[in-house]
Length: 255
Image 1 (spheres, rainbow, N blue to C red):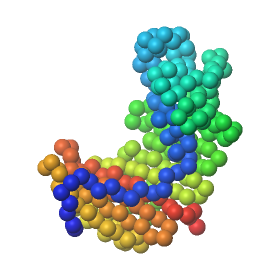
Image 2: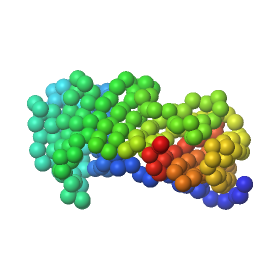
Image 3: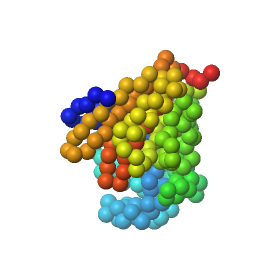
């Protein structure tokens, strides 16, 4: 293994999904913040709504819509084009890129429908709560699942033995699979790096490993790929153990 004296060298991530970019990345993470309210941050929403001058009754009835209004008001790059409290809808304009997005919230179903200016529609569904919470996004390009409802990684993506993946995300875009997961183990950084290096090679991928030592902490990365698949692994030593973050993706649809 080679060594570098600075920070963790980034593992090569799979190509960004159009679904993730459009639904989750748009408007500076606005939707993800709203999702937190839909899941159950009602008290926070009501408190902030009062501070911002919003009707507290709206926050009680539709926390997602109340949060959307609050966040748009606080962001100088966004503006409300129109809103309808009774229908649970809000249309937001992004001043920077000129894009417009309409969101419709259903607090009973913990769901949200997102429509862009071209009429492309995506649905966001929340289920569970706490550590069992999950979110599923469906759009014309595919689907995204985050949390306990996410699909497990495919067989060619190794998972460290004796560990349970957390913070999982799975993406299915036009038949191509990608995603992320993280885990914590008490094994050493070197042992974890060696496992992933060997496992990627056993699954037919190339493997390139780099280690680092910075501010008294050790870590490293493993990247692997072939003509149709890629995996990136970042490993770091922390106070509670060795942390592992894995990203993976298919460059073409699985046959």
